[in-house]
Every structure is written in C-alpha cells, then in structure tokens.
Image 1 (tube, rainbow, N blue to C red):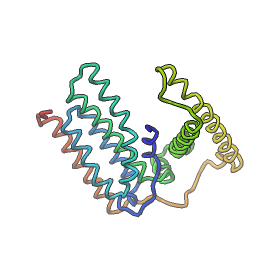
Image 2: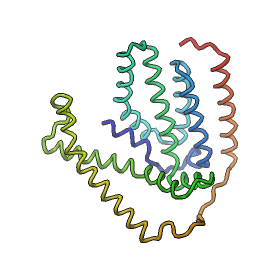
Image 3: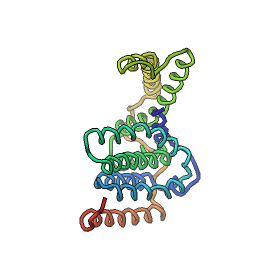
Image 4: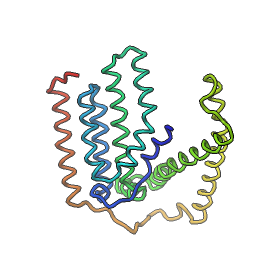
Length: 247
C-alpha cells in the first residue's frame, strides 16, 4: 500500500556514521540532493544522483526501512510514468521524471530515517527559528508515520469485515474509503486534543528563553561532509552548464 512511503519519515535509531552526523550537516546534504535532482531533467544524471545515495543508505544501516518506503512509492512512480506518457512527453523523459521522484523521496527518507525529531528541533533553533514553529514541525514529523500505521490498521480491520476498496467504478472506490477516513480523522482529533492537554499541563510557552540538555557540535565527520557537498555542488553545476548530456 502507498502508505508505506511514509515509513521513510520515521526515525530509526542505529549506531552508524550517518546517525552521528550533526543534523545541520544532514539538512545541508539533503538540500544538495534536492537542488541537484530538481536541476536536471535528463535520465542519466538523475539515475547517477539516485545511485550516489545508496552508499550513504548502506552506511546508515537503513536498507530495510528505505526499501519499504521505495516499495510504497512504486504506485505513485507508475502514476507519474503513465501521466507523462499520456501527455506525450516521451518514454525517456517519463522514466526520467519517475527517477526524479524516487531520487527526491530517497533523499528525504535518508534524512528523516537518520535524524531524530529532537535533533531536528535543536538544529532549527540554532538557526533562530521560533521554538513554536520548531515544535509544530517536529510534532507533524512524529505524527505522520503514526497516522500512517493507524490508517493501515483501520484498512486491515475493514477488509477483515468484508470491505473491498478496489471494487466498483471510480466514484464507488472513493466512497469505499469513507469507513477508513472517518475513524482516522476522529482518532487524529482525539490525539491532538490529548497533546493540547499535555502541553497546557506543562505550561507550554510560559518560559520565553528555553534551555536544552544537549548542545549540537560539529565534528570531523561533519567537516568532511561539508567538503563532499561543496565538491558535489561544483560537479553538478559544471555538468549542468558545461557538459552536453546525451539523455
């Protein structure tokens, strides 16, 4: 099911060189992959950018979670391929756009699977982003995989009761999802109310100047990563401006 793609947003704790990097370093690296992937529309550089991420995924020991996220995105990738073919964009271009989508998803999965929401919040605060915005963003990141798992549980429960999601015409299929959306929305509202009560009981926002138990510090691995990103940016710009890409 396509909800598996959201597994790529759930942090997986592991002892790996990628996990120990500063979250700001990983944010910069993810931004580089995003920039490079959007910059190209040809298949060859997009495939190279996708393959370059594989060693980092192996170093982060997140193969299983990453592969699950990719399988969940397969349906969306096929839709992108078919839609581009329908609008006569050509087979090679359609494959390139599908590769771009998978590359973007892979970079986001690599970042979120190896970066805890707490470290992400600290990194955003280091960049002087208001704590309320940091808290809202990291809370959303935490809740998306939870809601996805909850939706999958509801789907399995409804199917065990005889609900057929893929039966009927397009309108019928949309109506089939109502028994899934209603309990999912109700549970999400209940969860948000519980969170609001917890925040109120702990006097959220009462102290303007906050302190943190942990401090982010750049290590030698972060400086090596910065150097690799700088070299990567230079190579990407050179390839875009000075090299004729065949396809």
